[in-house]
Each structure stands twice: as structure tokens, then as C-alpha cells.
Length: 237
Image 1 (cartoon, rainbow, N blue to C red):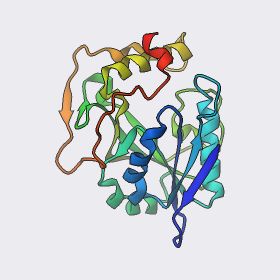
Image 2: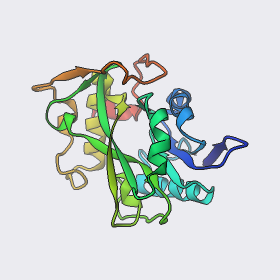
Image 3: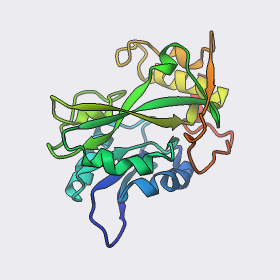
Image 4: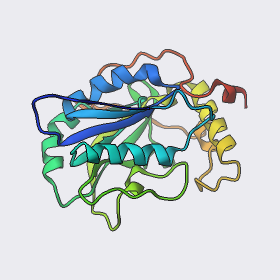
């Protein structure tokens, strides 16, 4: 089920897009985080789905089309378990003014504590395009899992790698790290959708960490609830 909330009395320039199901209780804090950065948001409530994991590609295409149909020039893609650093709000006017760029990317920080993220190997290299120009329309790529948000925009694309951080909270708890690896191995047992596989998600060999630098924090502050935020069935898989 789709829903939208758009701030009254102002032009619609950028709308956040997200879906939720097992992580629905995280949505209010996520909205508090992005509210200074957007003119509203469009959400897909996936809680009525009977499938273990519904088609991600279909959900994302629907959200982006809805944002464009609502008049947005840009979409800010986010998940309920993610937070942009607070400095993103001040950076938004310049990012939105860059009409030559189609995709603005952010360093994805996999959190192992509310203020600490992992930086060794692949962990320090993760980057995702989340601020997307809708000026050229939306395409629906083939597949159903692990496609980047930028895959829904026509190619070629002009990409800008921002210095800003996007913090991913799901990895804080070791139980969630193991459950996440198990879930993706269940959904993609042959590893066709991600070459690196999924075992690395629960592997702490050689782990190195970095504390969020001064002035780069996110809000509201995260207090972990110990819940799984994904199908509990997979916790023992």
C-alpha cells in the first residue's frame, strides 16, 4: 500500500522514498532524520505481503514513479534502518542545484555500534547512489534483489560522489548480521545476484573500526532495541 505526505505551502523539489515491513517501528526516527532535507515522502507499506521477501525491484520502481508523478525533480532513497549525517541538510541546496548530475552517491557506513562503523576491506569501500534526478524518467530493470537505486534511471548517468555519510544501523547487533547473511543466502542460494556472496556479512576476521568524526553525526541518536528487523524465521537458518 502506497502513502504520501508532502509539506504544505512549498514547492515539491525532493521527496524521500522508502518501504517498510519488519522494520516499521524504525520509520518515525528515520523521518525525523530526513525531514530537514526533503519536501515530503512517499512510502510503501509492505506488511500485507505474504511472501518472505517481496519483489524489491517492483517496489522501488513504484516509489520512484510516484515521486515523479507528484512533481518531484529529485528522489532521496532511504531505508528505515538508515540515517544520513546531519550535515546533509546544509548540503542539499547545492546538490539539488547541480542539474548536470543524475546520481549523488554517499559513503555507506555499516555500523557496529551507534557511533562506530567498520572500515576494513569491502566495508570501507561501500558507496551508494541515493539522491536521484527524476528529470529523464524511470526505467524498471530486470531482477528482484540487490539492484542499486541508480539502476532505475536511464543511462548514461552523470555521477557525483559526495563526501557525506549514510549510516546503516542494521549491522550493529551480531544476531542481525548473522540473520542478514542467512536471509540473503536463502533468497539467492547460488549467489547470482551478488558476486561477493553473503558470508562476509557475519565474518569479523580482520575487522577494523572508526568512530564517527566530530561534526559528522546523525540524529536522532540511536538506541538499539535488540529486535531483528527482518524475518525471524531466518535467525536460525
